Amino acid sequence: LHRVDRRQRQMCIRDSVGLELLQRPEEYDQIVLMNDSVFGPLYGLGSVFEWLNRSGLDCASLSSSNELGYHLQSYFLCFNGCLIRNGILEQFLSGVVQEDSKGTIVEKYEVGLSRLLLAGNWNIGAYYDVRELSLWRRILAVFRNGKNKGWSYFQLCRRAVRGQVGNPSLTHWRDLIESGVPFVKVQLLRDNPLSMDMANIHRYLKQFSSYEDIQKYLA
Image (cartoon, rainbow, N blue to C red; front, side, top):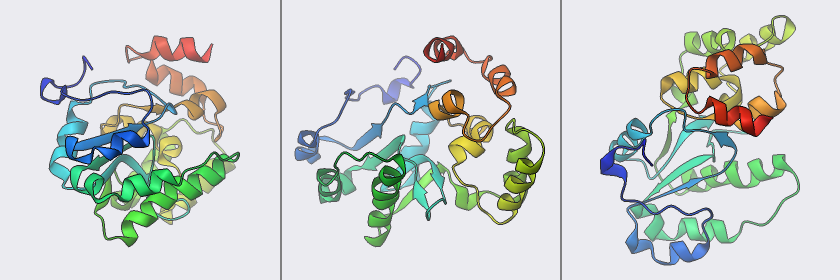
């Protein structure tokens, strides 16, 4: 919390959130749900919370994706008081059960939540929203992210031209960080699912003071 603006320090932090939290909806102006799939913050969150407060969104994330349809990525989700008091969040979370497949989790809960909110005409959006990325920015991100050259570059560029960003927390990791999202995916550094140039990624991340902690986790 020492990196968060003083105006934002009046908050309740819990390691996990049960449904009992949502049984007192009148107590909260916002609820932020985060998970442990990211490293960070690499720098302060002040600008993020300022954006959240002025966005006017009922549900906001740090990034969105158009894989499996437009949806908010769930590593950071902020719900405003109106949505909390409506009961739709409690209803959705009460239906969450353990799943064995990550793909099922993403489709059923991450994508499913966004579909539910859009169907209910709730206003949702992301700090880094794939719907707002220009063609030039999508292509530039491919070349700046440390992808190995060759056929994979061609495939990603072709997808970028078509507006298929994929999972921006992987495909646009650097653009995310430089746009104000102070997190990097654990999966990117641990598993390298897109065969990125990891040496280049680590050289970039060394500029952040939390990089030493990242290295310790990955060791």
